[in-house]
Length: 209
Image (cartoon, rainbow, N blue to C red; front, side, top):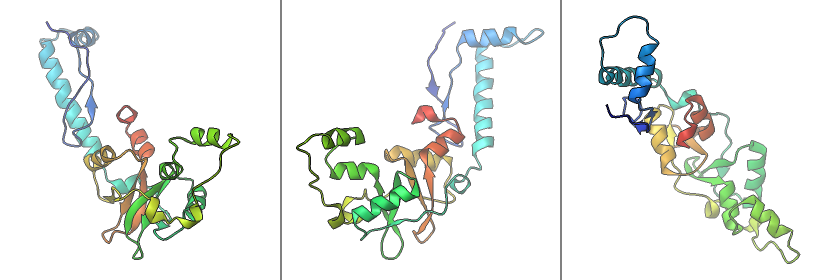
């Protein structure tokens, strides 16, 4: 019999990206030895039962998932015409590493992240920025108080609605490398924020990050 030890993704009704461990013949034979009595079943039958049970369990656990159950609320968005220095203070106060940016009608039009600030300062990491600041020749050339959020933000924002399902969330996080996704109402205004770490931790999906 062929013995395969790799992991392969299996599809299910709740999310095409949810991985399923591929059982080897050795795994199955070991499990069968721990079941009392005689089992008139082949390893292929056992494997098929496992796959069907996995898909059923995933559908039961995740089929009713909606973003509203995990999103963080009470989010104060940034205004598109706010200077970057004021936006930086707002980010620090919020405790988040990114916040949605809204237009004059309160509709989400982008996201401002710590990475956006680093990009404006022409560095890739805060450690690189710190090392640059330790250089005697370093001087800030970027005038944050003269730059608007709309110039530095990442746009357009990848957004979801309150009723978005499991598959929608997986697809949204695959579209960008951000750590959070704005949740919007039907009019495009901010309803909340879904953090990647909250979603992945809730379903033990850290290996997809």
